[in-house]
Image 1 (cartoon, rainbow, N blue to C red):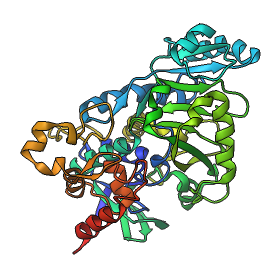
Image 2 (cartoon, rainbow, N blue to C red):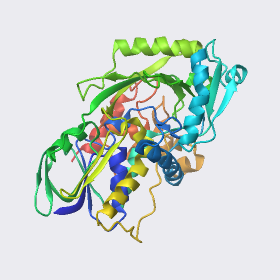
Image 3 (cartoon, rainbow, N blue to C red):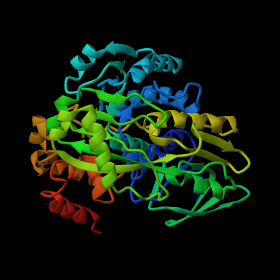
Image 4 (cartoon, one colour):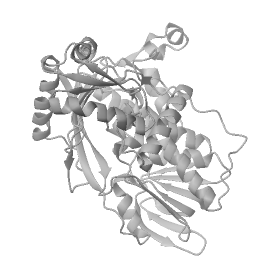
Length: 457
């Protein structure tokens, strides 16, 4: 079997590309090295639907983030991906930072975002009363929002499969052979053949790029650690609080999450190990120190979890997207954390590149409707709160995870879905089970037994 397109990497960007191309007359195979979609960079980030106000003007990243903001916002409404339009504020703590705010507003306007505004100290504290002392001014960014990155990835993957894409998980690419009319990818799940290969492999994108003879970038895994606070702290953080960026980076943010918690982070640490997603004592101390300066009373609340993710940074300051017509190969590299917002725009851009290369990418007339995703956010009604739904099916009222109010019906539905979970982490990303205060202490054994029953032959 030879597919017209093979997309390598089932993170948000890869799934978005597979979804777009599966909506044409092309046959598409989507490969993922791990056991589940969205199990790499895409699962652990700051989960912001980003306006792109602070991107570098004129870059491809700036253009695609701005476009992706609207594409993903519209898609979230259609599919039920949880989004909360909280807005954000950059807080200036020094005279130098306060003097930077007008420049940031001009930068936002250069990026096409014209809704920023500068507010003085009194307004900063009116909007976020629990900020620490010493804030001088702020820059408001009303369009910044929080989103469920897990559901975004799963929705795009589900849509791709329901449009006809073939998803192969546990398929790490180990070698590439380019033939006269197609390329063979040697994977841990067997050989896969495609007329075109699209490299959306994230942390492994440079290695796959080298298989096609290139040495144009190196992925530098950048670890970002975050702290998650108990839901009781959520009223303290009504919007996203950002630091004024400096030459050292964007700094630490304090943000509400779509699940009703509060998040502080991330750190920014370049590593050599592309699998180092563990947290560290140094990272914890750094976040406590920086976060306590931003919002001291927040740190009187309980920290219920910490986690880390790796971003696929490179030596370049922009996305690296390129089409090689001779080898029928497209590189989509160096996307970093903004790929959550820009993913659908990247897919649109790659589709246009293929069209320019002579590939027929006309959208089919018989596309299925977009999937309607289960709501795991706090912005809508959860199944246990829906009396009619519980009456019709009592499994939605039988709670398995009491911290997160996850019902047996939701777990059953996850296993019966188009892209079912392969392990406990996958089930967590689909339902929030084991994601609360006790981190699975009470429900973990029961959840594991449910997984074993579903996974049994």
